[in-house]
Structure formats: C-alpha cells, structure tokens
Length: 184
Image 1 (spheres, rainbow, N blue to C red):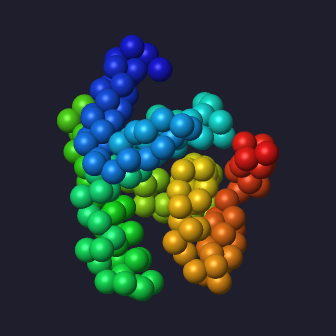
Image 2 (image 1 turned 30 degrees about the vertical axis):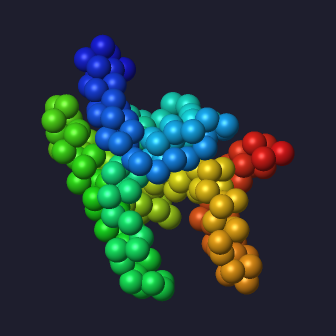
C-alpha cells in the first residue's frame, strides 16, 4: 500500500472507530472494557489478521465497519420472532453499509471499492466469493469469542444447540481450526 492509500485507509478506519466509540454499551474484550461496537471491530480486525494477514483493503474496511453504529437500532425496535429478527438484521446490514459508504466516499474511495465493501458487508455471493466467506468467518469468530457465553445464558437450551450448529455450518474449516486453537 502506498503512502496515500495508507493514509486513506487510516482515515476511514479512524472514522469508523470514532463512530463506534460512541456506543454506550460495554463489551469486555480480553479482559478490557470497550465500547461494544468498537470492541467488536477490534476483535474482527484481529481475527481477520489471524485468518488472512494479506487481506484486501476492501475486506479490511468491511470487517472494521461491520457493526458500524449498530446500537442506534436496538433489537427491541423490531417484532419478536424470526421474521422480526431477520428484518432487523437486514436493516443493520443496510445502516452499517450506508454509514461506511459515506465515510469511504468522504475519504476519496472510488465507487468500485465502496461497492465491493457493500457486497462483503451484505454477504453477497457467500458460497462463491472467498472474501465473503472470510468475512463471515470473522463475524462468527467474534460472536463465539465475545458474545456466545452471555447469549447461551439467556437462550433456551433446546434452541441453543441449533444456533451452535448453524454458526458452525457457516464457518469454513480454516475458521473452525482457528477457533479450536484459540479456545484450546
């Protein structure tokens, strides 16, 4: 990455982090209290580096912005049940991407990069796009590390087995191996 591209990436990442630092919720990340969305972005970046140290700039940007401003739309603002959950989640993909796209454009990124980040953040072509699979792997690993324990405590045990099965089914063998090594 040349100096100009590096500064462009740093500026966009800084803007994502500044927005996510406003999250009033708290997440414990490896023993340290962090604003929730910022902590998730930091963990996602760490996991991406573990899985794909030479990741493309678009993938690195998508990972850093994956839950951008998520706390502004609480789950309780959508109906209970699976349909409500899916509608909320789609809305979150759109909101995170819209915010990321505005930041990327403000920092001079071309439309093709913005579109690529959007494809990744919306998990398009998951079965055929290796970067989209890596993006999904990273999000699953962040969930397992930072949220699973709390999630398991408030979830019906009968439903939990299905959720774990679905999470593992979304992950590549490479991500499962990385999780096993980490969780040891």
